[in-house]
Amino acid sequence: MYHLEAALERLTIHSSSSFRSLSIHNAQPTGAPFHLPTHIGAFSQLLQTLQLYEISDLQLPEMTCLRVLVLSGSRKRIPLQSIASVLGKLPLLQTLVFEGSPIAFKPYDSTEYLSTALPATALSSLTCLRLRGLRSRRELIHNYLARLLALLSPASSIMSLEVETGIELQDLADALHNPWPSTRFPNLRIATFQIISPPDRSLQNLLNIFTTISDAKLWLMPSHKEYRLMFKPSLDSATRLSPLVNLPRLERVEFRFATESRLRKFLDIAAKDDGLRTLWASPATVHELLASGIWTAGHVTTHCANQAGECSHIHLVCEGNETLNMCLKSER
Image (tube, rainbow, N blue to C red; front, side):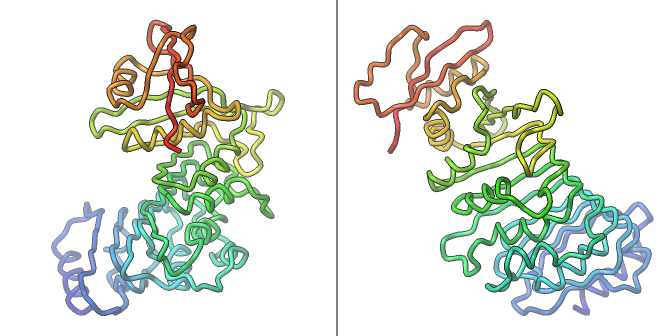
């Protein structure tokens, strides 16, 4: 830690007051604690963005200007007590990003306990929460995502939530749907999910939360070949609020898919049981769907040629109001 402290001293001396961002990757094999020396007052008070990778312990001074904090780790994890202490010292933090598994939860840390682990005043300015990275079935701490969401549940000011998940999708569905002593995300406006190879039942449970969704917009981002599907939850006509208990102010839900096969699985499940029925898309997006070879299309009056019944159907409306009946043969 001496070398890091000396380097920060030199940064403080030689950098101007415009120094705003710091990223640190810990390549040391040992688990020595990381801390920004508290006596470097000017440095810690000016910093607005801090990114920390593979940190095994963490101590920070109060950082009154920090707006963005990124904590990433898998091989090294930070004790819960250190995380709770740090998050209580960032009064103006607006964006918090967790990548991988940076927190060392204990097997006996219940979600009820974790929901009270942060100081009451912690994360009062947080508006954007991003949870990235997948855990395998060999993860030692079961329900890691559920524990992380419980820890952050007191942050009632969150307006944007982004979650990447796979086998832990049920944790996300439970956090959004299950009753809680107080509303989990009372001010959430936008929810973005990137779901990778989830269990079918967990995906169905997540979609069941949005039972009133019948149509959505689908588009392809050419820059990185990513499909995005967006819909707006229905609102109560009297209160203009969402009927979802934990998401009363939710305005938009977006799902992202890096491949056609992931989109295929999602739509196969979403289109069954009188669920999602209509997609709105551009001609370019329709062209890519048909080029993938897993879709067939005809005008709405065209009957499906698949007599086995192992398929899903969605009406697709593109520019010019041309309506096609998309047949998706099930993989299952």
